[in-house]
Image (spheres, rainbow, N blue to C red):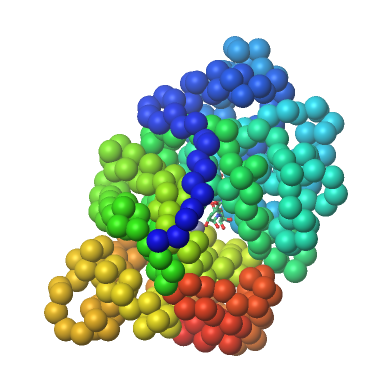
Amino acid sequence: MFDFKYFAPTKVLFGKNTESKVAELIKEFGGTKVLIHYGGGSVVRSGLLKRVKDTLDSAGISYVELGGAVPNPHLSLVYEGIELCKKENVDFLLAIGGGSAIDSAKAIGYGLANEGDVWDYYDYKRKVTGSVPLGVILTIAATGSEMSDSSVITKEEGLVKRGYSSDFGRPKFAILNPELTMTLPDYQTACGCTDIMMHTMERYFTNGGNMEITDALAEGLLRTVKKNAIILRDDPKNYDARAEVMWAGSLSHNGLTGCGNDGGDWMTHKLEHELGGLYDVAHGAGLAAIWGSWARYVYKNCLHRFKRFALNVMDVENTGSDEDIALRGIEAMEDFYRSIGMPTNLRELGVNATDEDLVLMAHKCAVGVGGEMGSAKVLNEEAMLEIFRASM
Ligand code: NZQ
Ligand code: ZN
């Protein structure tokens, strides 16, 4: 067991109609002029944006708005947001949507509160020393960005997708109304469940330390999301299942399921970020497409955790060798992905990469992680390439 820091300062309002409290919350955190930041228009179509604006109008809070945060959000919109906020003297950011709108808002906050080019932080050249307060109304359970310290942005030039983590980026509040996720396409719901599970799995498949309480939370979360992902596949309007998944999404990436371990593996995420950068795939689907190849490459170096996962999460029968049990756990996970319509390789993901592309992605990934990374098994550029090749 390692020492750890746990910092989850986000105030959460969970349940039906909680978005009606948004003005109160903005005032509580000192906001007087707000940037409402959102994605490609789902919040317009659902009527949520209008409801939020009406609430702010009634409370006398002025705002400007900026839509257009795409999945794998772009740096150019971040720059646009920073300029707009400077011009309009914005002192509070409100993201309405999913990880893309939230991450884009986090980047805008960094750009406003710090001098110089905001990409420097994503390029690991500097660290932020502050941000502008951010609140979130979540419309898709997936990334956990509503409580997390991270923000992932894609620089269009060179298609470089990078994450930056800072406690300054953690939202002041998160409004979680499971009903707001009911308009999601089934594919996005499944992508979200995959991502949620992966944030805990990244912290679970490690070689450095663990705690019984953390493992129990992690396994409980994984079993819960697995079960409710199937319920949502068959019954997308099931409120309780939406609620279970939504809360799991926040807990999976706020640090709770990593307390006492060595910080996590994170290589499935790093490999996926290359796919997201180059092919613009949905993050959760990219994770599912790469995970099996990653797992088969590393499991022997982390056998105790893969065995435990197989038995406690995937309900694999406790017979045969440890290796055999671990492999059946990986297969069961892939069966689960297929059962919710997720891909288990790059072709199923719709990516027909050339070997040249795979070499490029492995290289960019290695550069992005500073050479090598991983806890279940440390991966260098060669290993990353092997995993990409195995995932074709
Ligand atoms: O853009 P709109 O029109 O809103 O449509 C979105 C988008 O097309 C749609 N959507 C969202 N809520 C909806 C809805 N459609 C109908 N009804 C609703 N209620 O769903 C699509 C996906 O939205 P997006 O925000 O892109 O999804 P997600 O939350 O999965 O975010 C993905 C991004 O977050 C990054 C990913 O890499 C990716 O760039 N991540 C951020 C993390 C973090 N900050 O902590 C951690 C993650 O590991 C991840 O890397
Ligand atoms: Zn993720």
